[in-house]
Image (cartoon, rainbow over all chains, first blue to last red):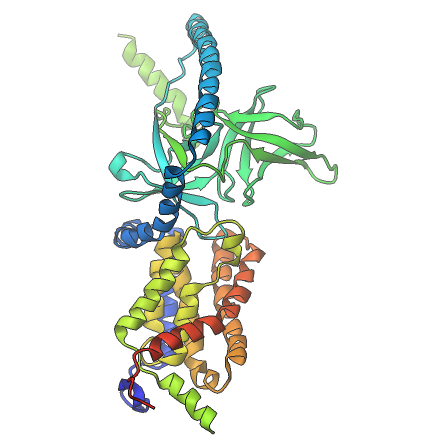
Length: 305
Length: 172
């Protein structure tokens, strides 16, 4: 029995208080560095790779359960499912036909009007590996990372709309912040009238806030909000949310507008990572506005001879 | 008197380093299970509990340094800020170390009240950091303190039983 000896009174190293102070200061320092400067991403990645096997292990029971469920699912369910999917496919095919015609027409009209063509974008399928275990945040981890060319900033969608944005990339995982996270904002347009606005996450799983809209803003309950594509992060025209309630209280300068996310933000196992949208030309700095005409003149001079 | 002796012996039970490491591994694994929704709200702080158990039962084996390292690992896995869990667990381990003599004098039910207070302190530290950095606190987060404290009695029984197993079978 190694511990029958009494506590050693001497030579015990620094006291508990000293250690508390030391490690607290160390933690606070790390917190400060991480929150303000984001220097520790590489360290985080190294530790993430080390604990990856254990994380994988913890999700194993769930996967085995799901796998077993799929394996022994009854045949009649599969047949019914298959029939339903066929039906869905047929109706989708009809709509797709129309879509092709409309797309061609749209391309032609855009060419006539000399508007820049909308870029098409590819998608990459990814499975949800883990769900965030922090109650404060709305995040999840996908099983594709830098090894599959995922980059921070890419949009993540499902079959009905925008789910979120890739905010941090590990070698085999990527962290997605959902649109309902408190820290995220999505530039949107109202489908009905094209009104531009920004929708903010509320921190609540099933709610988004449409902030900074004047009380008389032309928004109605039931309006669908789609991405405007104006920031160069999200591709345009992806469904984001639907307005569920509007509180026009004259005591406040802005209307309080609550929206419901259209995508299954808390559903699904498989999501699509939209390949990054081609970067927009750099935004001119506002201070440079006075110098801008000069540069233009210079250019004009140079192009004259 | 006899009872006191028994209790003292419980605290004196040997624990191999491998057993301590395994208990932490189990706690971390439990914490990393895919909790969600109400489960996430009610999820006890397994790592914190096991840490507190060892801090009160084997204070010269598991201390503040260990707590800090565990905190960093949990930080990475939870994608929280670096040092957030580390700070909370440091405070927790300090509380456990300071109160370990005192906690040994009480029975399990009274111990869980102490545990409740210590866990509350560590949860408050975590929430404070979050509030400072992100500017809001989800109050339902604190429900975890109650479930964790409720888990103290079963956890202690379990770990004690696992430690008993290694005892010499010829002992009376």
